[in-house]
Length: 537
Image (tube, rainbow, N blue to C red; front, side):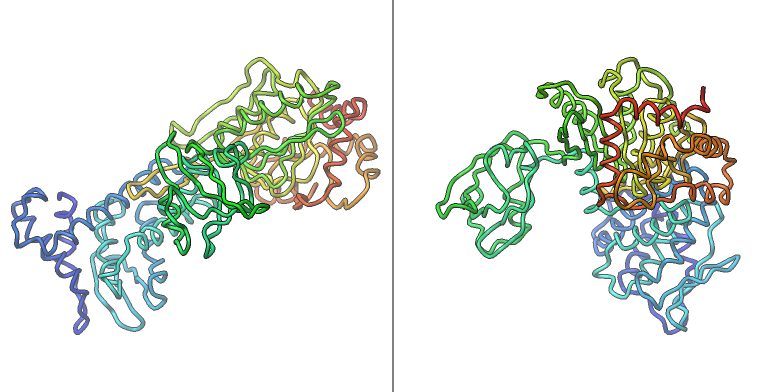
């Protein structure tokens, strides 16, 4: 209620232009707020004559709580946030997302809401650092700008404000609404369920995919199966929402699935037990004596899955492994702690990464602990222009500590870390709050990782790239020295990125063939390794 009373001077000063009436709900909310501020009663103690505006006041309180939480976190934690008024003005200038004809004109003293050539109203401009004033003004302008207040969705306001404000921070900070945020959290942390995806058809649900070793697959559900009933609920004509409701339940509970397998006309029944399902990010195979492990992204189980996969490949092998290839092509990154854990698995000692930022929590230093899961086996990373964030941190840690050879092209150059802020509406903000310094002392952001062996421009065959390993050691050393000594100037970084231009090479087999050759040939591995790192000795 204190916040609503803070709206009073703004509501009193909001001057609608002649013949332009505000929406009835706005007027009702305003009247209720001003009336209640006289004695400032508790919300539940409001007399019955205020019930008509209770929904509007409750909505304003809810909206204010989300805006306050988001903008407070942005102001406190962003690397270098613009002044508070600039963040709010950026959001208000984004009002056209509600209606292309709307805009907010800004003067030193006022904010003017305009539709086409008509002024809808004027409100005083809050002081630059007046959080309450800016929130109150934002809600008021949003309410007045909505053409259909009865259908107003606060999520429209949150997207409008946060997306525009975060765009002033950098290109990686972002806002996700409730639905998107829940999907993001499920991808990072897992979700209670059966581990399947499906398409809705007239007869029921067609299984599109199942999570490897997940509850559904373990119970015998396969891709292409048709689920016709869930716990005896007939799915003929069911909606996706109904199917999701039937599938949902507490962890450990069983569900009855009536299934027609793709290869069978008879119905069968499966009873999977719901559990924590985490998307699989690690795939592996043994190619000759080399373990090839592909990492698609970094979620809470990535490092442990790599460890389990490598141990399984070593255990099942009839002959010892000769080397390991980690394929990070197209990997957009993910959880920082997983990149650190994965680097630590292969390092006996040394720095993994150093993080710097304005907020105390953004300053971090990560160092390796003793123990190498691969016992010193040749390790080759494959990267490309889509390898980003956590995958770049991993590559930098391994190449700078002389533990791996990196094959491919310059990486994306996203050397920033986002902190995840959960908001009262169950949405989230991913806010850039630190920059990553590689162990060799350079900042990854907007530079990326220079591979040991550059494959840019190579389409087929190994000869040219293999010759380059020993063909120009002086040139490679000079390139790396320039990389490590860069001043951070944008023009210089852009020039350095042209040494080995970033390319999307996820679909080609050239880079992988080269990586497998290096991992299986210790002499070739040692030569490329020494060539690229000679200047560090």
